[in-house]
Length: 411
Length: 174
Image 1 (spheres, rainbow over the protein chains, first blue to last red):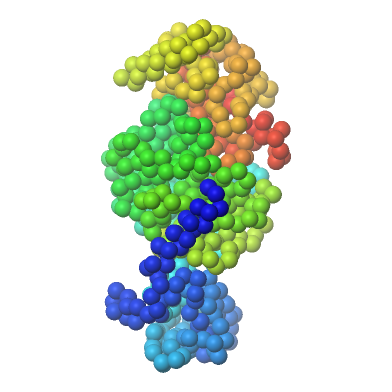
Image 2 (cartoon, each protein chain N blue to C red):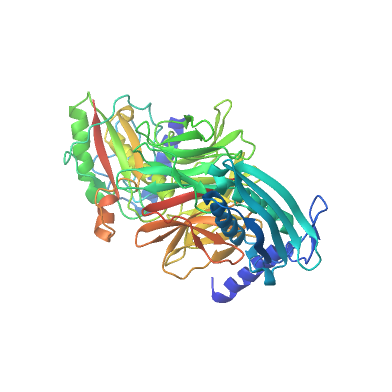
């Protein structure tokens, strides 16, 4: 793609992104008045009116709230003098309970956006801050916040690759598995309380299901040969999965209730990998390499003729987002970049980061604006959050190590 | 049904190859006795694989240096001419030791996407397996296991390490 057409695609994409956002004041579904601004412009919010009491929990709450508002993409914490919305109230600690009273008021017209009281265990101050942040984002802008969502990822040591989980801001970081085994590419189940991933717990690559509430783990697919890329359909009834039991890696759909398998691809000359469902569950985007290089293909969940949607370079690890756009990792010479495609037009926008690093394994946040990905430089990888509307990237993993394959929770 | 499809594909592949080149030299051992063609043996990228049998109950034993790994070109599951002698040795061993089964492990270098590499490694293992089937080894004795890029033989982030890591290995099970 030459520079001119790249710019064209970029502006096209921004055009359609902004179309839905560029209204100066609007009504939400429930008829509440919010401040709507184009993506990239933020509502200035002051927290100076929040009286913070004694205690570590209250301090942690405030620090988390401030970070979460700043990273929401829609709000910006500023001094009171410049604020369009003033948040006031108090944060107090009483008998190991955090009590938060929170009012959000327009500074120009005294309009009330929100007035809410919260009470939560002080041991979990971060979670309460996430909730208040999401409520403020929703009340002020009408947008869906992401502070309460979570990200699961893989951490590699020399001997093992384990699953880890953290909050969307990188806090509350902890291991999910301690198997001393190899975990590959986790994905969330649409209900948001379980994961699927590939592991070698029975010596071969199988697809497992992990219930995050109960901690229960069970095998979902253990055919002979390869089982990988298992991902549950939006309605929860099916799983798209890559199997090699018939002699070659191919894409299948498995009915979870009956176990019935439908083979969707038949490519003796190619590999399939990394399926991802469209939001309506009618189509699947996946990777295949009949020409020698991996590209993205879209196929109906009922099978039929697949449609190749990328033409240049190497294209892997697609994630079909809730906004209908497919994020993937693309290399056209040089480094892997995160690319975003509208599958209706097949137009591609590249999130260019000319810093010599590889950006891989994108995963959409449920707000359809942010993307978690692995940024690899000098053969070390860290998780970053990218903003498709232009905020600078934020590094999520600060721990030493090698972190990759993030998956952003659907709720 | 599947077998007929395999035979058909094999026939089609042969026709194409002989039409295109007139008289291409056949691989050392030729198509296997059971009629299943070795894969990756010609310049075609086709895999004429048959379905896999059930997994073995026992884990395998890897004996260092017993069989040298079969090496592959970048992003390819095709078995190069100079690697085939290694597979002839493996086939000879399997013919002599009819009581053992084998797990063929497929590996890739660290270049590229991990999940895609899991598929690529599997395809290397399957290509290796199909070549052995083509040499007359019963496919039921040969399982595949892809580790993708997760278990490198050579550490180091350079072309020489990557060359050694694009491989299939042989694990013997009793």
